[in-house]
Amino acid sequence: MGPSMDDSESTRLIERARGGDTAAVGEIFARHRDRLRRMVDIRLDRRLQGRIDASDVVQEAHLEVAQRLNEYLADPKLPLFLWLRLVVGERLAKLHRTHLGAQKRDAALEVSIFREALPAASSAALAAHLLGKHTSPTQAAVRAERLIRLQEAINALDPIDREILSLRHFEELSRSEAALALGIEEAAAAKRYVRAMKRLKDLLGEEL
Image (cartoon, rainbow, N blue to C red):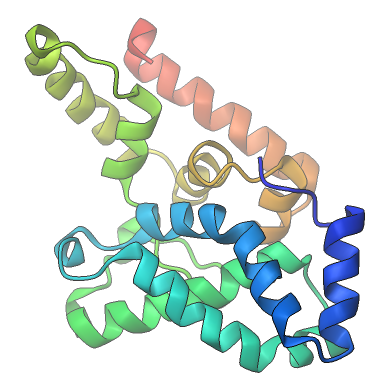
């Protein structure tokens, strides 16, 4: 997990930024850069991989954060990290619209979060993450077959259950952060996570 949004260092940085310290904005962003990149990695449309670098998306969002931080600080409705994540997600969504246009949407595979600001997580990326990467060359064919089955199982889940898996497993959000990101109660998010994992295990048996 990334650093807590409530720790003393985050509080000091926020207060410095509130006082007009521009360097504090960069420090705030740097503390969360790796988590934000993970979010872009799993949500970047596969058709754009190789054309758009996740680090560039995060860097472009950094500039927007600097411009909008005072707006956030005046009325912080979300924990700081979730707001940063939202700004990065909006930037990614704009890139999807620019490069893919009407091709981008597949309503059956998306979940509406924050007024559809964030592109849906890739089931292929999530499947690869859940399965792990430690495979010998002799096991490559077996792993490829398992990967396809796992991806199919993920696609069979309700969109919001796929999303909770991506938030908890890939983006490594805490239970409370995931609930806030989804706009649901923490207990409901926890139940959905358990249900999603059970569903995958029922579909895949001992493979997961």
